[in-house]
Amino acid sequence: MRRGNYAQLSLFSCYEYFLLLSPGQAIVRKVAAMKSLLAGMIRIPSYNLGSIAHISLMKFQITEDDQSVIRRVAHAVEGFREFDVQLGGAGIFHHGTTGTLMLQPANSDRIHRLHGTIMTEFRRRRLIRPHITIARNVANEELLKVNLRDFDCYDSFCCNKVTILKKAVEAPHYEVLQEVPFTPGKIF
Image (cartoon, rainbow, N blue to C red; front, top):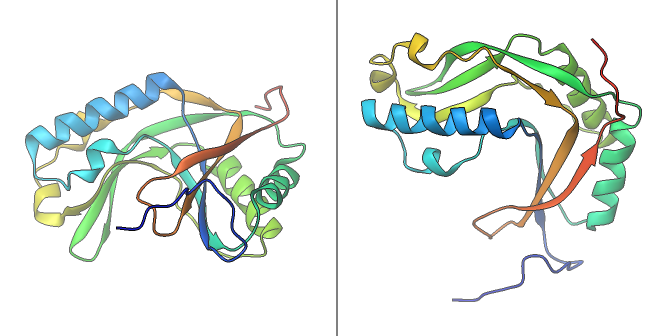
């Protein structure tokens, strides 16, 4: 099996970048506990237990150097102020025969604006439904057994940076490339 240094830049290799928002450790721990609780109640794909709580903004593959991606993200968030994300309880969205159990932000307008500025910077168009995944690709018949109130969470966290993850397309895991901070000082 061929091994490579996935952190090493090659002009001919394609890399996958993943931009996301990270909640604080308290929310990360709560979501991890929810994943364990859910796995004890119903059958879920095992990879859900290893994923860390986050809100996805954008995922893309390009043959580009890291510094260009970092500069473009920094330019997109320039002047963007940190803000609080209030979680508004649990929900499910269905996609075919499976669904995703997730936590929904009660106030997603700032996340949508941030996403829009990043999309513009990268000249891409895609809508998102901001959420923190508890478990994805769960069979709908399993999700019917879940009482959503058992997974409600109404906490909040300060969103103050965009995290850029990177991996070679064939690599199994992402590594943190950079955290791009927002301008300090909350806007309410």
